[in-house]
Image 1 (cartoon, helix red, strand yellow):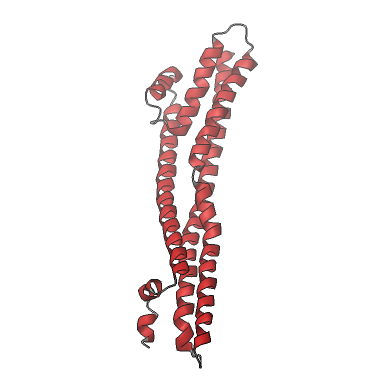
Image 2 (cartoon, one colour):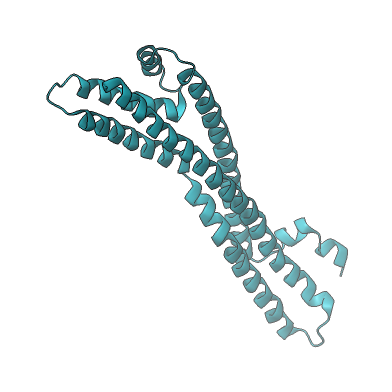
Length: 225
């Protein structure tokens, strides 16, 4: 037996049992999808952060709010989530401000509710597919472990036909089983790291959005006075 050839990674994958190959294929597919969403969410969060910074610079530059509202309405993607929150709040404020029967508190509360609703939608969009990364991080090791247990069972079952068992007989079977665990960890570890990082980044963006809602509400309240 050529132990070196049998224990190469490619050889172990090709010579694995059908069940272990299915487990490896599932883990490989899950890993590919998780890496896709890792890169996609990284791009989305980075672009959201940049758009938020640009909008804040425009908002706090002291320009006309009406002109800023028209600019955001014309290109809702340019302002990012915070720009859309501003648009929703100012639109509702303008609508309610035209109704003379409403109190100032009712107008501000209506604008704040509109901004809160848009805020929740934007956060939901940012958090989309994070649950998939969390599932990959928690489930992949167990799927790999299942393939490992199955491979080890096959390795020891094959010893029933051997009169004298040696390490050379069981090493390939155990090694191919451990490859499934390795692939499971390869899928899980990046998904867990990315999930924790993105949750932190989205929480920080959410704090910026909530702070803007309160600050903009105060500005609208001063305009009513």
